[in-house]
Image 1 (cartoon, rainbow, N blue to C red):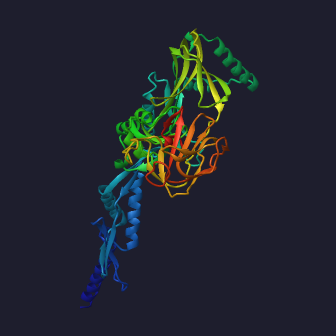
Image 2: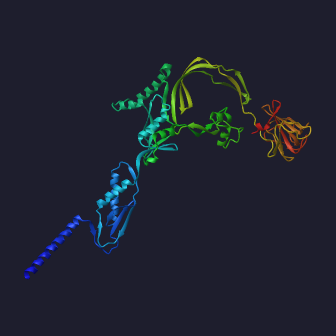
Image 3: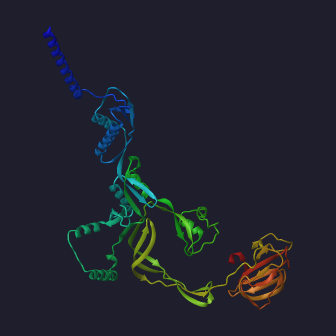
Length: 527
């Protein structure tokens, strides 16, 4: 009986050792279990973008796994990427629970992130031309865009576009520069050898070289064609990371940048211009020109030299300046020669010699903006037939000006054809009438000598004034005359009071201007 009890104890001890060994083995080969603690949620189901990726023991572990997964995904991509990553955890309190290893959770998270990648941010370039911007996939495409703009005018493919750092900007902004293929080759050659010349010697050689070449070059020695080219608009290029949908295909960008579009610009009025000529020259209707310019009320509005008028011209987004050396033969006119006469007014002019056109051969540097000629400079000419200039004698004295002879008043009758106001009255009005109360002050429209002051048939009381430019003004239907014949009056000096005398239909002033003895429309001559 004692032997059996001893054997039973031995079996219990062996059982205990096997149980402990089984627990130790389970710790290595079975899922991890967490013990029960009275601290609230102690096991968490982890969801990423709505998909279950495992079970962990804390929210911190889940966050760390996501950060590691995102970092691994970024290391495996050369571009920036956008990913939706919504992390959710659902906790519960358990006595014993199974949790996954963090490496397993990271692998599942990485798989979810790859499948839910929203879009890659590509390294690209934003090109800004004035107010226009376009995004391109590479710097090579930017250069191709610029090259397309200049190739429209560089038919011999002399110039290359290149990107350089803009020295005027603090940030890393690129700009465009045009360089000839000869300059590229020359810069490569200079980089292989050192060539030094004294500054003074170099400057003198350039000065005398240019003088000598200009004086001695024959027509055959000039290099005709394109001699200079540059971009007319400021170009800024910056590196950016953008989505595929934000990048414009190169062909579309070239189309947008190089095609002509109607753009508003300013035209400065030149001598001899009329509104109709300006509209026609810019392919506009008169109505369009008036709508675009608030200062122009109608087609009869006055314009002066130097006025600025808004017009539209066809221009591409990226304009190109260029200068071409051209040879041509042409008839030409010599400049008009003027002889000043201090005794004449500037309105007086007499031609003393009629002109005759000459003929010449010319080398000229012609500058363009896109297709429009901007300037022309003659660098060499050979006169085949000398022109004869036009010779004009002209006055230098400023002619008198004319002002409205009354303040206020209503214009009651204009110049020219009209319905007879009274029976027997003329249907052609030789002046203008301002309706106003009797006794209103009447002033001299311009300085001059009183030729008549008194009663005149039809005019009632009237004043005639002769002016230095040969013109005469008349003031009729007065109530009182304040000047005498032969008296000299200044512009704006009171000469009479308005009235209703003579053949009149009511209180008013009748005013005339005569040139060469004939009445003209006074309104056209009043300042």
